[in-house]
Amino acid sequence: MPIPDAVQATAPAEAVDCDSPPLHAAPLDEAALDDDGDLLREKCGVFGIYGHTDAAAFTALGLHALQHRGQEAAGIVTFDGQQFHSERRLGLVGDHFTKAAIIERLAGEAAIGHCRYSTTGGTFLRNVQPLYADLAGGGIAVCHNGNLTNALTLRRKLIRDGAICQSTSDTEIILHLVARSASTRLVDKFVDALRQIEGAYSLVALSNKKLIGARDPLGIRPLVLGDLDGTPILASETCALDIIGARHVREIENGEVIVISKDGIESHFPFERQRQRPCIFEYIYFARPDSIVGDKSVYDVRKRMGNELAGEEHDRFDVVVPVPDSGVPAAIGYAQTSGVPFELGIIRNHYVGRTFIEPTQQIRALGVRLKHSVNRGQVEGRRVVLIDDSLVRGTTSGRIVQMVRDAGASEVHMRIASPPITHPDYYGIDTPERDNLLAAKMSLEEMRHFIGADSLAFLSVDGIYRAMGHNGRNDAEPQYTDHCFTGDYPTPLTDVAAAERAQQLSLLAETG
Image 1: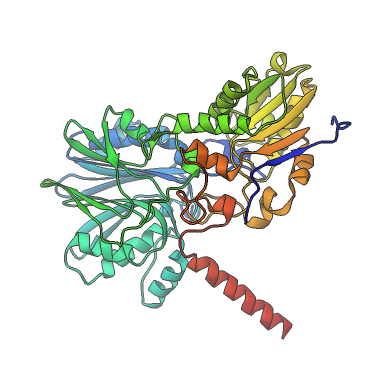
Image 2 (image 1 turned 180 degrees about the vertical axis):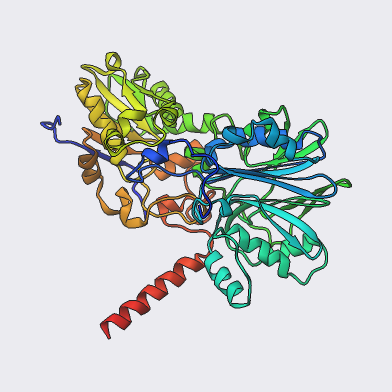
């Protein structure tokens, strides 16, 4: 679906107006207050380390740095040379893996860990990763960041063939495929499994002899290699290396399978090489600003998105206000290019989750006001431009616009440092169905009216690519996975196609 370069709407001149009980109650975060599903959900974070006496502790620290990628659950599996040890918990990393007793139970010099947001499978203890299985050649644990677009199709076939599934996670499918491979070497079994799956993934697996990492053929999901005084590390982002003082060595390449053992590091490229197309949302929203993704500073890219947004702008305002926290870098870039002063006109309360563990419906109704408050002195009587990174359903944006207006702003304008989200994601981002995406069902003017802003504008698709260092989007060979804006899905969507066929057959049956 083509999107015009200039995307803006302005009001008329006269308009002013678990299957098992949780081991710990998960703290209330934005998701718990997000009744309308107006926030993009992070995917997951993975971490692995091989050959260090403090493997479990370093894995816990790495997961803590990756907590932004998933707040529902976390787990660590270690191997001590004789047996595997596993600790999996619902809730935040810091609620469980800072306890000495838990770390002491995770003996061994090799470990993998995972923090989770459930894009596939529910929030049950049985779905918490890493998932472990005993195979003919020994035990293996696997954790996964991403989403398999043929997982349901594979699952149905496996169950028909007699497989017994213990979870509803697509990661378990990988274990089944590894177990059923006719190959003798574990790495070959692992590759056999990869050849059967579709979609986006970064995988970290631990056997009794090896730490294995893999990245999907397009490199949609991120994975990096680090080094801590000779100890190799795999992680979703470089911020997980920084927290333990490790050095960033390089990215795992798209389609690469990396094998780490006592004999060193081997790289395998079992797939036909393709152009890399990493997920553009890592730069817009998901990765931590202090991470390096694809040799680019996420913080610098987000600032440049703000620069580009201001460069496509024609209006003038009195103050630039970010929607915290994700809108801050783009707002800084917008202010730098436009010359409009930057102010923290909205203050975020980071302790909401600790205050309201089980909110009443009345408290839920307060919604955004629990998380954000307006800094009245910076907005009163002024023409305010709010900068945010994305717009999903629009309900949260509408409430923030109204809050700023209630605080006395003379005008409230909204600018989004990414294009309109018109298509759902199937690669690990928990976006709503297309009918629930604001930009998929409304014109720009209808969206502006819906959120109550005096004007609304989005960064163009070409603007995103300019911020990434390109002249614009190469429609013939796009450099990034940007399907949420363009509808250009780079891999087969087997399960989606199967569901659509089933729906069509059901409709035909109903109509006779």
